[in-house]
Amino acid sequence: MRKQEITEKCHALFDRANKILGVSFMAKLWKKSHRQIYLWAADSRACENTSENPLEKIVAMIRELEKKREEKLARAFVDILASSLGYRVIPAAGALESESRVMMAAREIFSRAETMALDLDGRGAPLNMRQIKDGVSVRPSG
Image (cartoon, rainbow, N blue to C red; front, side):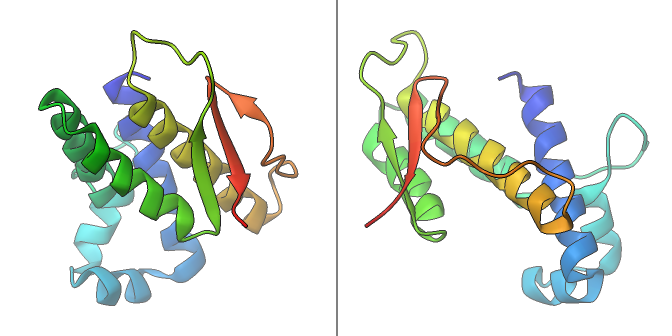
């Protein structure tokens, strides 16, 4: 996934969370101003002023860890995100060698989170968490 696509998804996720939880809750949670929360959620295609949000920073950190060949640590970040929702990420057999399995798992988590945010609003399709996509399977843990 291109950096621009990740940026757009991260901003879309923050926008949905902001609409569902409210800007006051988000500002208190992140210890940031309402303005900063709105900047994190702003769509760069439609808004002149945006700001890199925490999801984008996590993705950048995971990429840097992988560049330094610290895949276990990068994987630990992906695992904790998935486990917080009761899921675990399992690399599929035969995943593409040209791309890190950890980044594929991170993409899958962001994709699932986006789908779940849409489901909360009643606009998305039902989740099929056993579906395999891009060589990574996300399944309920247990």
